[in-house]
Image (cartoon, rainbow, N blue to C red; front, side, top):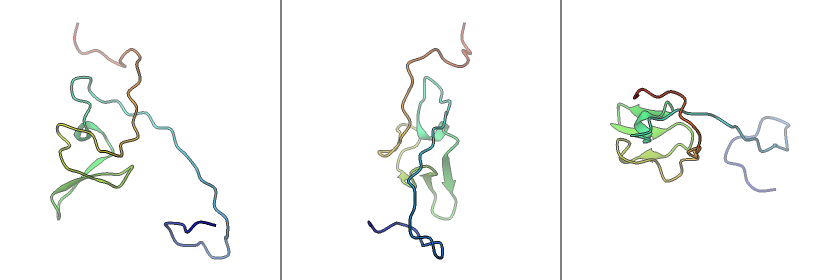
Length: 83
């Protein structure tokens, strides 16, 4: 069995891999990390981190993280502020 990146839970010897599907609404004109609710600013280090991938985001105002799992759906936007 491969080594797991977390501590064992007592007598438990097997773990099941689990996945999650989340929906995040990003502005069409700025689909960058800073607009994502999972982007978090850490004050002591003055950096932005992704709470999904745990990666440091170098430029959250203009890019998305290299490990970002979000896929832009090619569907109608949820809400259009422009007419």
